[in-house]
Length: 171
Image 1 (cartoon, helix red, strand yellow):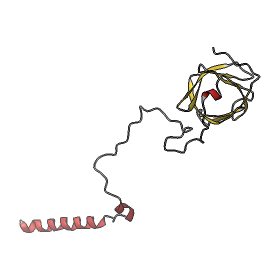
Image 2 (tube, one colour):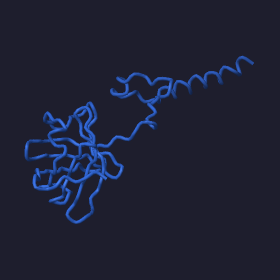
Image 3 (cartoon, helix red, strand yellow):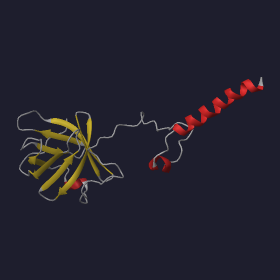
């Protein structure tokens, strides 16, 4: 019986050697990589984090142009008129009232009352319940240049002081 098993065993050894010889050798890049771990890759669950707009740079990205040293007293309780903007109608009036009310009055519409806040050196405008981080790019006695980070493309607004215009009232 041993003589009958010998040819079968020999055939298995030859087949195993042949199959092993048919495996392709790993490429140089595959050989350089460490072997895959037995555990699956785990990624962080970000489903509970707020969405981040790409209009605002992350902490590790390049920041907006350096903002001038600003205090709210420099732009509050003054009437500002749009000189130029990427989307806002010229001659639209902006007033940042000291109680935190933002009044925006376009020449062809009704005044809109929102809010504004200045915290940690950063301006935020709130229009119709939506908060927009806003960079103050330039501020002097006669001009206020803002960049509002609205959804999509940021909106640049160059405003000039309108000393002849009456300060609007809060609602």
